[in-house]
Length: 91
Image 1: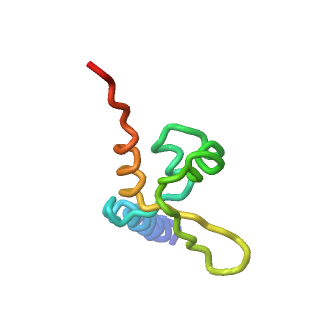
Image 2: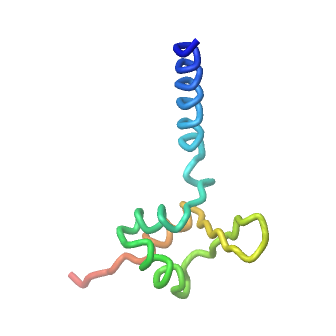
């Protein structure tokens, strides 16, 4: 019985782990921690500075209501924003 349960739980875990990987990057939504990791900054710096800059991509509030904000950004928008920040150097 225990071996059967372990096998079922192992299979379920594999299926659940695969769910996140199936979202294409052009549809993926990133939480502040994922945005900060991509940008190579702390989550605090991202939330208090970068996300508030003019021209930064708009966030989505995915909370289920109430007072709490649960912000997400489109991954492709963050990636596009980074590309627009390139510094052009004179030759």
